[in-house]
Structure formats: structure tokens, C-alpha cells
Amino acid sequence: MDGDFTGPQSGPMKNTETTETFDNLVRAEFAPKNTYLNTASSGLLPARTVAALHEAVAIRVEGRPLDPLFDDVEVARAAFARLAAVPVTRVAAGPSVSAQTGLIAASLPAGAEVLTAEDDFTSVLNPFHARGDLKVRAVPLERLAESVRPGTALVAVSAAQSADGRIADLPALREAARAHGARTYVDFSQAAGWLPMEAGAHDFTVATTFKWLLGPHGAAFLVVPEDFGGLSPLLAGWVAAEEPWNSCYGPVTELAHSARRFDVSPALFTYTGVARSLALIEELGVAAVQAHDLALADRFRTGLASLGHEPLPAPGSAIVSVPGLGARRPELSRAGIEVSDRAGNLRASFHLYNTEADVDRLLDVLSG
Image 1 (cartoon, rainbow, N blue to C red):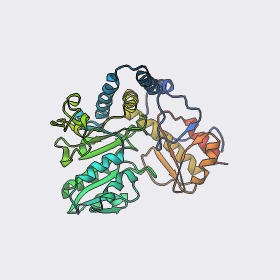
Image 2: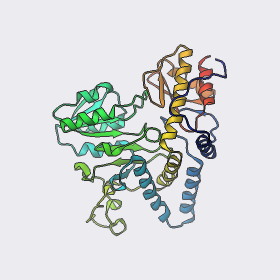
Image 3: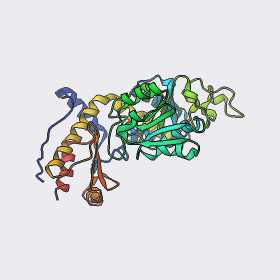
Image 4: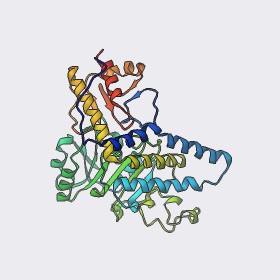
């Protein structure tokens, strides 16, 4: 394929000054050595995050007090709350999506029906199956809202599907759940950072931080209702107390009055990095990141059409999955292009550090 491929742009046009500010911020934070189109697996770390991690290690090595690292947990929690558009009192900090899903699963009565999307990501599903006494029902994503029925206790779904980027119709799901008295649990792991998130519109939401939010592995934020939605703090230790440092010995006598009662002991290095990464997302603005990411995804879709390939339908998504091309991942990796192979599909995911040149390089190699 010709190296000067051009394609249409999508999303709102940014003015020159805004574009320059966006580009300058990104250039200051990222300098990948390859063409990295695999954020749906793991995002790149910004320079500020790497610097903070080095400083966190130095604190441990030199024996300095860890207070700044504990402070970073709260800085990260507050930043996520702003991105999620909820009060910080509704945000709990945990280690992973599966752990947070397990907390939700444990709150359900035996025999409760959980409605899920077929082939959703395992971390959103398996804790419900592991209970052994819940009725877990799976339907195609497009039929999720219409499949809510009387007796459905909970609907659990990813906002954007990991395998192919399809975006759930969350407004329709919310309306259907409300009509039948069901609660909703939405995983924003493949959406938070490029897709606007209104966590308050759902009963429970979760997002890991090592993908589009550009943090290190080991953190996932859970948003719960103001009344905690019937959750029990099954994993509560001293950090879940209203006064953690006065609750280090014996049973916790007073749990935190906020969602912090669902915290587990934090991976301090991780949250130090997450705090800096979320600050960058806030500086850039999710709307600007979304416009950038979707323009690149649409450029790739257009280029694929010229090569005779048709991606799986996922309108408005930063993730593009192409049937039949997954086996070319090793070849692409040898060429310095990182993508994923998911069930035989080539999955490319576009984020703020990617450029039109990255898209064109992938198309060039795919053209043979």
C-alpha cells in the first residue's frame, strides 16, 4: 500500500491552538520505540508516571516515611472521581476488576439472576459463575436491554467490549433495568480515558487503570451507590476503617463512612503512578482524547476497506477488530507494530500517543 495513505477524519475538529497544546503535552510524555497499537491490552506509561515511580522506589530504598505514597492513593481516588463524575465518597480502591466483581457477586442472594453479554471479558463474568448458586444468563450484547425481565437482579456488562470494541447501549440498559427493578454493574476498563463516563448513572461501575488510563498494573476503582448498594466489606482491613492508623490491631470498630470501607491495602507504587497518569488525562480532556482516538480508528477502517478487509462493526469505538488477520500478529511485531490476536481477529486500539503515521504504517504492512 502507498505510504501516503489519507483518509477522512471523524469527531469534532479541534482549533489549531488546542491541537498544538494536545500534541505538545503528548510529545512531552511519550516516545515509543515502536508503533504501539495495543492499548486495549495495556497502555503506555507517561514520563511523569515513570518519574513518580522512580521517586517512590527511592523513598523505600532510602527509608523515608511512606506518607507521600499513601497520600497518592487519595489523589488518585479524587482524580478518578472527577473523571467518573461522582463524589469521591462513592469510590473504592481495589486491586483488580475480578476482585471488585467478586464483591458485587457476594452481595447477591442465592438464586438471583445475573444478566450478562455473551463473551464479555472474564473478569466481569466469572465471579458470578464461581458462586455456583446464581442464575447467570448470557445474551448477545445488542439484545441486553430487551432481555432484562422481572426477576433479573443485576445486569453486568462492559461499556466497550474487549474483543471487538462494541459499545453497549447504556442508556437503554439503564432504562430497562429501572423498569424491572434490576441493578446495573458496568465495567469501563476498555472505555475510561477515551469515552466519557457517567458512573453515577449506574448502580455500580468499575475500571482498571492500566489500559486507557495509562497507569501501572494493580489498581481498579469501584463506584458504589451512596447507600453502598447492599455490599458487605468482606475484604476490609485496617485501611477500610474510618481512622485507619488507629485501627491496626484487633477488629475494626468503625468502618469508613464512605466507599473507602471497601478498600484493600493499596499497592502504593501503583497508586503513585495512577495519580500522575490520571492528571495527564484530565489535562488533555476526555473529549479531546476521544476525538483524537476515533479519528485514527476511522482512518484505519477506511484503509482496511481499500485493502478489501471489513472490520467487525463497532461504530464510535477506538478499538478495531479485523476477522482473519490475527495470525499476522507475530509478523507485525517483527516489523515493530504491536497489536493483539483475539480469537483469530487482529485487534488494533488507538490512543492519544498514536498518530496518522502509525495507522498508515500498519496499513502498509497489512497490504503486503
